[in-house]
Length: 117
Length: 115
Figure 1 (cartoon, rainbow over the protein chains, first blue to last red):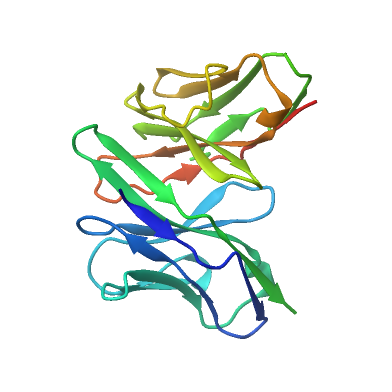
Figure 2: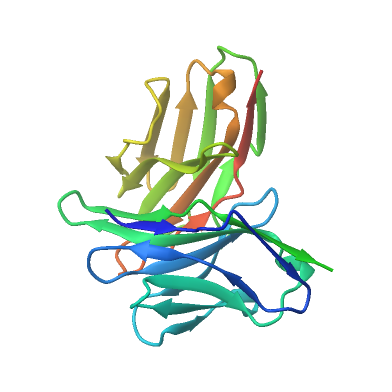
């Protein structure tokens, strides 16, 4: 089964510092990986995805993610954090099963990012 | 496009009452997902439709929960009878799953409180 793990419940960073939110994956076949952000009282918003190609993927709001096949990781990064980046971040992996026709996403448990002014 | 639309945004009801949550997916999307989010259990997939047909309902907690998708532009999630432990935020999401990488687009959610 496809799965992702987010080892940190919370990440604290000072405004202006670089931030990293960690995600590792376990898949059979090629991984299709995603990051989502959830602001308070809102639904999840798509940030970026990795399908193939460059290991560094750029997304919305200045975020990027680095795909590392040898470490089975897909960490989310931003060079300079903003207070407004404070939110809940979810990593996800494509969950495709040819026998059932399932085409869904499996989400991690989420990491709360707190950016202090 | 207006995005995924959910109604109501907030629902407060008494234990034992029937609750119906509604979702309108993004036009042209062929898959629809219902999720539940709580502090204790995080984000849980309840049921998933593809081309209006339920594909996976293994996440539906029990028989009190039912979901329908009568057409490509509308879905309902019903809880009958409701219980306090059903209190959560319920999200609907839609996706176009003909592509290889099918990101999902989420609605704003319905915050359900059962007293």
